[in-house]
Length: 209
Image 1: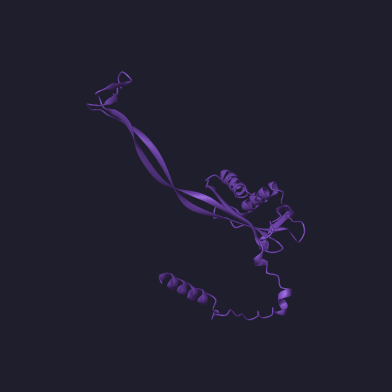
Image 2: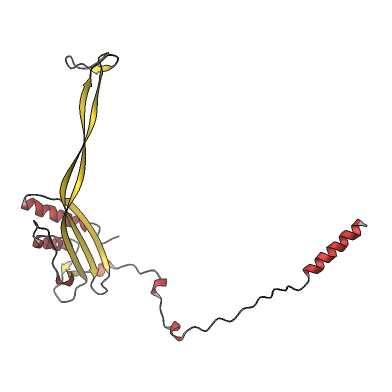
């Protein structure tokens, strides 16, 4: 009897599985694409092509504006330093109205905090340790220890910060942007040398690999 009952339950289960599903899938057709879709190009869907830095051969000041300097630095000195640094990277001043690159440069003076650590030696003469015999030289037991005390000094310095920006003359898009700083000098000749070094440092990674 139990065997027949189990067979009956199994038959009911199989019959239920073969019954029609009350949930019927249905879908509506997609609306037609707009007419302009065939001629529209979405540039954001594709990665930007790599920039060809080799096509940049000459440059001019952006908006025909010379660099801005600080109160104690002649803007012409910054312009000469930028021109010399660009020349070292194969970029020449444009001789015609149209150029490949537009250059913007400025100089500002900022203050920085610097820290210096000095270790000052000391003698701790006492019993139970090893100390330095200042009279006979060398270390001896039972007369103290010899060590150092770290002293951290904080001071403020002035630095010259040079910023350079290069733009594609055709599209106006930024091509290169960098800044570098150097310690400000009191002597005019030393200041000019430091300025040239800062500009070269700002362009040290151009063109990017």
